[in-house]
Image (cartoon, rainbow, N blue to C red):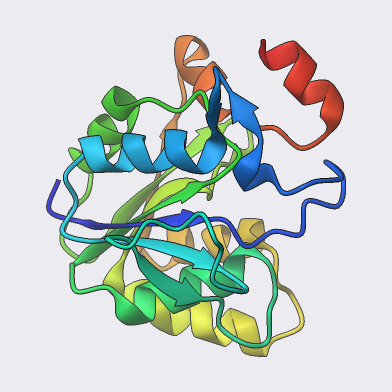
Length: 190
């Protein structure tokens, strides 16, 4: 895909109680699983977005520190969009180990100039496995300056102004979006 990619790994993992990036999934740390997945897509560049430079970050992966003020994944998205050299940026959360290259490639086939795609399950957008157009940086920065840091709110705005197009996630694809937030999620993921 002719896009840039960012692995969003700046969360505090409060509910999990330990750093999600280093959790093992199928014998590998999540950071390794997700970077392997992104590398399969052969993006123009890959970033890791965090609050501090993690010890696990490979030397060939660029670091983007979350934009300040730190407001969760919104800050990581802002930082990566600001550094991206491509017309679009694929954002992927560290805690979605069931995402597949095939699904992300299918998203890449749906982008258009100035317009990205965001998967939707029911009425809820999946902004942490979406492709944003470079021109969304204006909206993302404005959201960082406002009172509402919700990616759901941002996605609604981007859909409304034609910068994102929602794609309905089929039942057979919904497992891709299962994420690991709490220790119980690790047990059910095995």
